[in-house]
Amino acid sequence: MGKKIFSGVQPTGNLHLGNYLGAITNFVELSNDNTNDCFFCVVDLHAITVNQDPKELRNNIRETVATFIASGIDPKKNTIFNQSRVSAHSEAAWILSCVARMGWLNRMTQFKEKAGKDKEKASIGLYSYPVLMAADILLYDTSHVPVGDDQKQHLELCRNIAQKFNSDFKKDDFLKIPEPLIQKDFSRIMSLKDGLKKMSKSELSDSSRINLTDTEDLIINKVKKAKTDPLPMPSTIDELENRPEAKNLLGIYSCLTNTKLENSIKNFSKKNFSDFKEILSQVLVDKIVPISQEIKKLLNDQNYLDKILLDGSEKANKIASEKVKKIHEIIGF
Ligand code: AMP
Ligand code: TRP
Image 1 (cartoon, protein in one colour):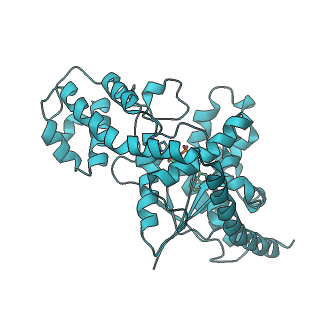
Image 2 (cartoon, rainbow, N blue to C red):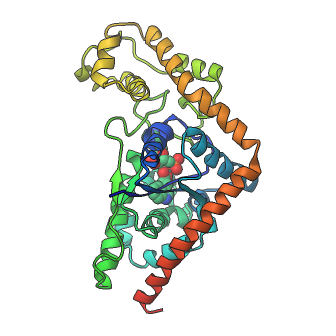
Image 3 (cartoon, rainbow, N blue to C red):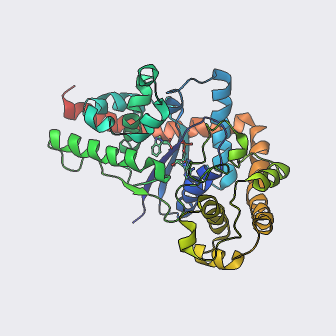
């Protein structure tokens, strides 16, 4: 039987190689299986948990849709929409926030990282962010959620919320318990400047990441400047343990070329990093530049992108509002 897929990406600009390899390639693969029913959501409500410039936000929403399509998601076969258009997400988030427990949310590491030292100044939305994410998923009776490894804890919380709702209201299978789908190898792509830090949209230095909108020259330059260590390329997997930058670059190469990590290590064993980097740049250029060009082309046709979001949200709205109606009945509204 086919899977019911739901995933979300924040429209906060700078979609990068980490998003691509950690999540979007998985979206594309799942969406290519015609037995699956896929929902890909531009989570604009999540984006405003930190300050956003309205004009940039609107552009970034369109850019996220363009990135989905340019990466190979067919908007005719899949539902692509933006979260704020489907009010059921906000409604369900409120209801589920009365089911979720403070103790559960207090354990979320993403909040701790994003709020930093001054938690008092973080928005309440940033804190309750995972509850909205649970609402997104549960409204569609989702069976599988493709995400990067950093979202594993949020998925676990979503499962706990669904189980508690079902047991509080004695409705065994009403909210479906979703399974995470996380890439087996390299579910976390690291910064090009620091192999111990996640590649991230919010990192100040643009050279820490390969953006999906980067040009050939930019990609070549960023790979050239990527941090390495003074030793030659490793020759065993064990060596990678203490060499995070080598591990990350070899991981990126392996993902992009569909090569087993062991074989990539063998191919480049004892070579200079500069030789490897030249080959890696070429692989990245071949993969990213066509996507980057397609994104730019799609962004010239805003009406097309807006129509996809409008159609998608109509489809999503039908399903999500039905589910909220049933939730109301169960609760006693
Ligand atoms: P976000 O940009 O935070 O909305 O993330 C969108 C998707 O990309 C989520 O599934 C994340 O788990 C995934 N993701 C973000 N950064 C990385 C990374 N550095 N490595 C792997 N996956 C990532
Ligand atoms: N929190 C996710 C992230 O930052 C985005 C997201 C929001 C999401 N709602 C979701 C992912 C539902 C999967 C399913 O990456």
